[in-house]
Amino acid sequence: MSDLILQAAVLGSLGLGAGVLGGVIGFGTTIILMPALVYFYGPIQAIPVIALVATVANLSRIFLWWNVIQWRACFVYSLAAIPFTVLGVNTLVQLDERLIEITLGIFLILLIPIRRWMRNKNFYLKLWQMALVGAGIGYLTGIVATTGAINTPFFLAYGLSKGAFLGTEAASTLSILFTKGITFHQLGFLNTTAIIQGLLIGSCVLVGSIFSKKIVLALPEKKFLLLMELVMLISGLSILAMSF
Image (cartoon, rainbow, N blue to C red; front, side, top):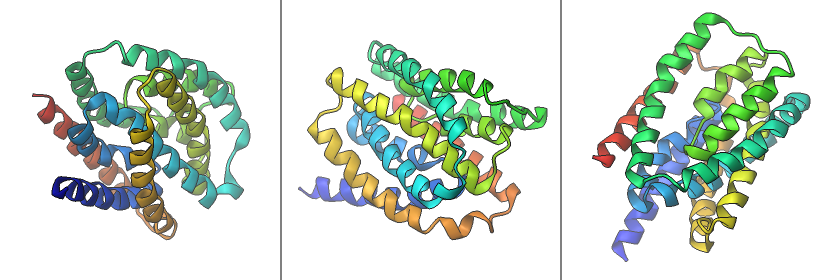
């Protein structure tokens, strides 16, 4: 019983902090929670729980930034992302658990140089190119727990920033998360326990997200980028440590 209370306290506190961070930089909610969830539930069970938590987090961002969301970009992105998400989830369940942990850790760490390279290239994307992004991110999201960090530069390259970026990216990703949840359920990995766990942690994330809106415009860009990369590095190293 004491173990359950400790687990709830740890995940609830992390969820609250993750909600604030995710609401400010557009991702990071699941990155913060991922090491603890992998530790408590294992890598495969953690991923559908993370998908539910991310769904709640994205819904909160959509609500906060509804008036500035670019719905055309959401539609084009989602149309391509949905079938590739199904393909990614079916790939995931065939993999070894330790391999999944190592993949998650390396993926998060590699996002740091990848994001810097993309920023230096000053990519600008057209509407139709968002479909290619949706297909690639959809497949990756089916395999790994979170792709919000690598999703970010593409939406910024489409010309979005601050509230428009946060809301549009959240609305676009929501289609992937719904698809992922349905596919996990059909494959037998999203059971009642996982749903309850995801919703409870998601409620803490929701509370944290409410406090994030006032911080968004005040946060300097350099601190934003450093905070984002620090979160990815720490989480990636934590998961790699657990896998060994």
